[in-house]
Length: 634
Image (cartoon, rainbow, N blue to C red; front, side, top):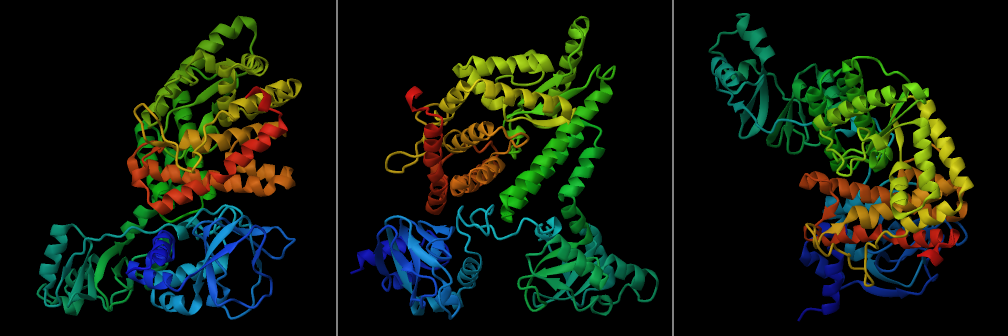
């Protein structure tokens, strides 16, 4: 008869690394040796400089704070499924930090002597433990690795070519050592390849390239009946499957070759699984952001930009697959998307019958204005232009409406759908002189109805995509001064921010859509991302901070401005980036906006990780409610 307690422990552990790398039978054996420990809030699990225990720990319920000592700031916060206390497993020395229960907590204590054999035998288990021990980065509170999301192991300042994995051909064209040069050349011609691998017992022993045929056969040095074994280049230069662009380039330059053989373990003693040519490397470099940026700036037609945008999405997928930090990913993809917008505007301007009569600015609104539009969604933009004399107003507006209409059409042609609500510069309501724009914003601030608050939410997240920066700075100065002069606006802004629906119910279950086309789906945008974005906007406006529209960057700035709340704000920044990454992955996976998620497609571990990002929302909204005394109007 099975031990039901150990069975439940095993069922819990299998959802989290490194236990997820083990077989169910191994987990059950380990779970029989595990001790379950209850810790009250603020009780110590282990102290600084304490001798190491004979176990390490997994959080089952609650949370454990790791600090340098009792009075220092939290260095790391471990919650459900996180491991800590690995020092006795990795290093034979006393604990270098304190672990204290942050709330009522249940721990699983895993004996070192029971688990060590699995760590040594299973490479994935050992690597995970070593990386966890080295980094202590498991969640938003980790100071030394803030900005990383779960599973990320790559620093943001690493060179991009070192991060990008090169794509090799898995279609291997091969022959035997007894194949003649003529036969090898015919195979290469028929398969349209520049190299053929010579194999023996499925192992690579040599390679014949176009260069070998030119130098040895075409010159007459060898007859065409010569065997492959006599003209092949040997030994073959081999590498493992995981190879970056830089590694491939360096390998080819070092050996002055144009082809690499990819094998199972990277040596000539294992089966060949692919071939990598200089052409493959150049194709991979083609998805490098610097190359894409140059291609965008050279593009003369919308059709070309649309093709390049497909490359941008491929680059985005690669970054997510390689766990590139979301901060870096967002900056690069946003910069490339902005470059596409600028190029579209540049092309349209050249096609206009005349140059703009006055200076203008093209504003990106909403998610694009926050540099968070990673997927291809609809357009949100506006155009503002310099004030002109009354007699020139009609002609000036007519020009810019025509310009905006062509730009919106160009953006549509490269993949941006039209905004269903027509919040686009081609709409006269969003193509305004500077004075008209100020009047519109002033109306929102002084007439704070539901519609005005909604419009201000979208418009206040703007950034300059093209044109004159002085116009934008002038507008920003006006907005902040007008907001200061109308403090009641904050109450309505806060009220709007607090209307966002909770992502989870009383028992922490996901709250799903109740009706409509997405019934029973989870709306990650409205229930998780928007509450954080709305709160960040309200708080940053209250500090009159200009030029920061990105939500995560707003929280990071707020952490500087309000040290007492810095821990919460940094956790919010982490959560937002994690949610944005999650939505982007879902969007790429299902070829949509990623807004609506079917929970059936998520693993239990993914659901737990997703829920962990919700923890900050309630606390953040409570701070806003108290600070702006908004409870009496909700």
